[in-house]
Image (cartoon, rainbow, N blue to C red):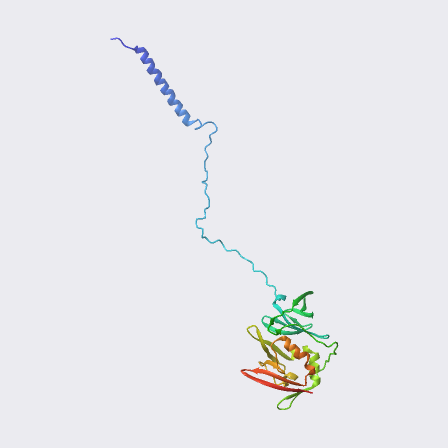
Length: 277
């Protein structure tokens, strides 16, 4: 039988295959021990930290509270004062103002809420504070025939009497007021509210009269028979239900010979009679 390959050729091929296998094995060990894993630029990073992001998981999480500084409140604002009435004569300026729901009568030079009354016009008053001037307009409120407005005296010139003269004498059913006493208070309105205090009485928005808040002892007003808490309702038949009505009586007080004062004391209404001579 004739062989396709010679034995020498087959042995040579086997020897070549074995040699290649040995060379390949040697190269594998060399590559593992000494050569870079991937190319010459490959560098293995060691000790790296994992990347992470802070994530807010709850939408309702409340943020840490922050400190909010309260605004500084400025004490004594001119907006807290309302001008209700003005009496402006040649020698005297008197205004009625409202502050914190309380009424007060001011003469020139007196203060309220830190503001000093400097003067007044026909429908405004001027105040000063810390070398600054402020102007308050008169509040005019019309309801029916009642109008709160400024009132000017028709007298051109009057002299100021510094000493109070005259007295009030009890005549039984009425009291007698000395004319000189009436003349003094007609020319010195600031002496009135220093000795007797009044505040308005309202029912809703309607003025019902004026309540006497105090009467100073030892003054002629203490002899008139009025008491603290009395509400003045009418004078000589004229209802005192507006500042205008009150000032009308005041500016004509020197021409009055007899005076009838209607007051409400508790739940009782009474009349007090006076004679001026």
